[in-house]
Amino acid sequence: MRNRRSSTELEAFGLTVALPAGWDGEIFKRPVDFASTAAAGTEAPSLHAANFSLPAERGDFGSGAVDIMGRRGVLVCLNEYDAESARSVLFSAEGVPQSLHPDDFATDTLQRPQAGQAGAQRFFHVGDRGFCLYVVIGSHSLRAMLVPVANEVLAGIKIAG
Image 1: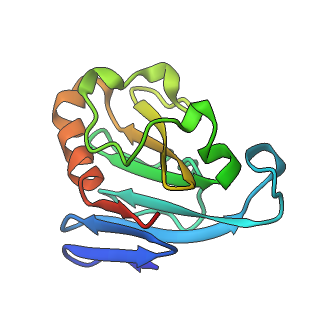
Image 2: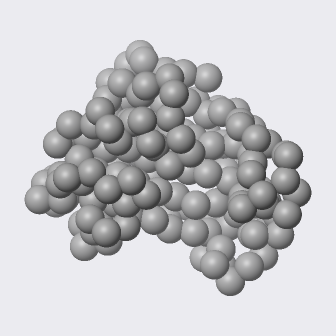
């Protein structure tokens, strides 16, 4: 489910996101590996949203997308984990984070380090669903400007528990 139009809402697999005008997004499922679930072989939903055109091929945490992101780019990745994870201490925070602070972003939290980029990661649960939110911005030095852009998308994410 992709969006390249003006402001719109995407909905699939119990995930909903309101995308600002000009954003690209997709909610999809891909097989889950052994590292992230006790029920290997199942499929878990992911949500990707960006203020630039997303490449067709990308990893769960945005590999492929971060490679083409410009300095003013923002990438929001939301990946679901199994129900057992949702009950773990790592996922104990409840509800989708509604906002991040510029100080939450660091260059050493990136899955795939890229010069100048910064990331922030949060784990949480909604009901019996566990999630990892991973946000990458194109420039650590522009974080005061870019993080509010990411927060606009976070405020538009809804998860059915």
